[in-house]
Structure formats: C-alpha cells, structure tokens
Length: 140
Image (cartoon, rainbow, N blue to C red):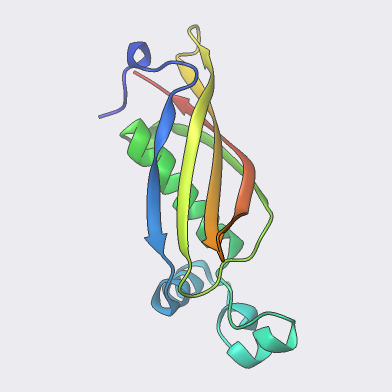
C-alpha cells in the first residue's frame, strides 16, 4: 500500500537498498532491455575501452535506485518521475547501495520529492554511480 502523505516529512531518509551486481543480473538486463552493447557482455571489448571488465548498464543501476524508491513508497504506481545523473561505472562484484531523502512535500498535490542516489565503496572511497537523482512520488 502506498505511504500516507501525513507520514512523510522533509528530511526523512529512504532506507538504503543493497544489491551485489552479478554477470547474471547484467545479462538478464541486456536481454530484457534489448541493449546488447558489448561493453556489458564481453570482457575483451570492455578492456579495449579502458575498463577492467564488463560494466553494468547505467539504466540497470537507475532501476535499482527506482526499486529503492518503490520500496519506500509502497507502490510502483505511486512513482511519478525518476531522474538520474550517471557519474561512475558499476563493475561485476560491486555492491551498490541506493538511497534517498525527502527534500520537499506538496500538500495540494500530495506528493513528495526525493533526492536519490546510488553509491559503491571501492578501496575505502565512496563513488557515486548515480548522483543528483530525483523522484517524485504521489502519496495517499
């Protein structure tokens, strides 16, 4: 069930959603999306392009961010808009963490606007595969 508008406040954090990225995930995404770019399927092609191996699709990573918003909202149909700025690659074996924070509420429209992101830790440094994302959610 969709969250109640009265239960949401500016500053509220969306619970982080973790996912270990696997070749099977990326292969399934490529098949479902029709995006068969070899950067996402062939290690040799990815290495020739300067990566250590295949990388996840940016939209795969954004989809994980969307799953975080849906889990918080309680209903996929409540998500009205989702945007992202892609900033870093995601590699096989990375654990990505999607999160967000409510930055505005509109009582007239019964919506919440959330700042959203996806992070990954590499060698003790936080990288941002998605930074400055946003979600607009209609609440009941």
